[in-house]
Length: 74
Image 1 (tube, rainbow, N blue to C red):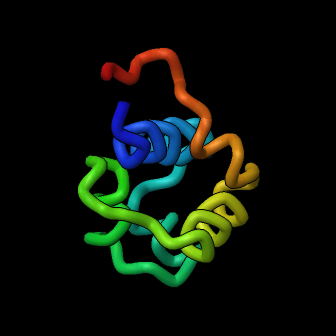
Image 2: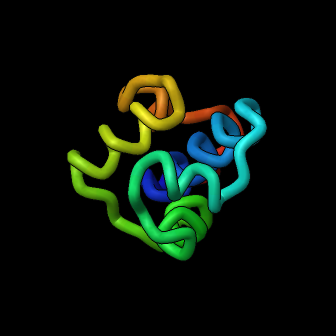
C-alpha cells in the first residue's frame, strides 16, 4: 500500500465532506491548488508539517489522514 495514495484519498474525502473545492482548501492552508491536486492523486510526499497543516484546515487529525480507508490496494 502506498501511503501517499492513502493520504490523497483521505484528503479528498474530508475535503468533499466539508464541501470545499481544492482552491478553497488551498487558501485555508496556504498551499497552491496544484499542490493539493498532487496530494490527492498520490504524487506528493508530504512533510509532517504539511500533513499537520492539511489536517488542521480539514478539521481533522494527521492520524485520520494516514489511516487506510479500506479502498487502498497493495
